[in-house]
Amino acid sequence: MSEHNIIQLGSILRESREAQGISIEKMAARTHIKVEHLINIETENFEKMPPKIFIKGIVAKYCEVCNLAKDEMLDRFDRYLIEDTKVNTRHDKLFKERKKMHSKWNFSRLFLILFLGLVGFFIVIQASSLLLPPKIEIYYPSSDLSSDAPSVEISGRVLRTKEFMINNQVVNVDKEGNFNYVLALESGVNNILIVAKNNWGKTSEILRKVIYMSTTSTTIIPESVDTTTSTITSNTTNITPEQ
Image 1 (cartoon, rainbow, N blue to C red):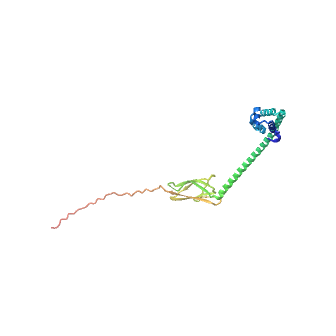
Image 2 (cartoon, one colour):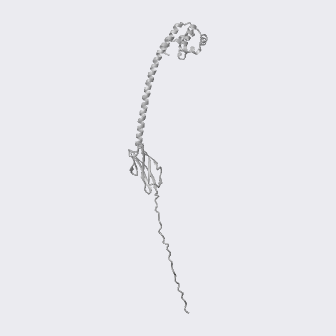
Image 3 (tube, rainbow, N blue to C red):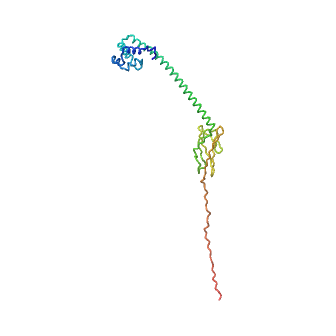
């Protein structure tokens, strides 16, 4: 409470009580009012006091005990309330204006933080494109393998890539970097070189080996064997020895 608005009501009541040689405890006993209420009114701490009508009753009790002009003191209290209401109204208005300005400042600061965050994020993305090489993720084949199929479908994803090739053949990727490519295999070991290149000429490579084992075989039919049996007749001549 400001000094000119309070009109020193509490000070007048305290000085009048002390001039009568009455302690705060004796005043509480005579007026049947709690000590804490008497202290609050003497220290002009009206915020902690009961409603206005109760405070006016305390002021009237003080006037009776201390021989003060009751009407004048109550008029002082009423004028204090009127002035204090005006002050509070001005304070409330000023508080609302400051709160409104503070809200605008918070919104502006939040917008600035978001803007700077987006700018920073864009710079980081551009820097990563400049400093980092392309990234290749191969979903299939995830490692070297053997296959009896005549072709293999290679799938995966690339990042930070301008040009993408598999065995020197340009492969198209979608906007998210995904790709699928079918490669015909030759019998034996097939080396699959996967290369990605970014805008700054940096490259990344992955080598996969696929062994193609053909299942095609030739059946050899043995030649026919002639089972004809030849019959040999042996003629025997009996020779009689000479005498």
